[in-house]
Length: 173
Image (tube, rainbow, N blue to C red; front, side, top):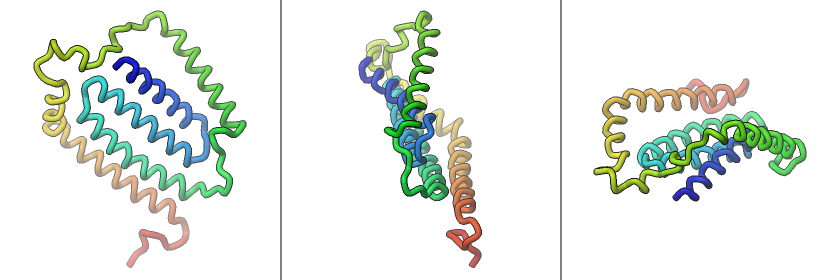
């Protein structure tokens, strides 16, 4: 399980580097999907499968809005790919920055944080996520409704910005 968590962490860092290296919006949206998938995979490995599923669905809804906005505003015939020279220079610079930043914190790293929830299952009576579901719907219900409202409002803002001077999807009837 430690190897799977290492793959999730590596994918998370590489996805963040892809988003930060400023390629075309299409590849930036792909990087966001990779980041959200790897982050939710790490949450699932540490014992929160329901929370990771809810977050992944919320992330996909938000990224759908971001992708629609970026694809509508940046209709370029020859988009910059991840293999172009300027993007590759940015990727290498960010990866060097990640390695240098990790070298500062390498001495204080604690190996026990790699332990996932399933490896300590003999010491617990129930899964860690069971209590979290009840708390999310009781105490966090208002936050779920607020998140859905913000995503809907963002969708309307994106549609209004993309329409410009023409009569688009939000025209008055």
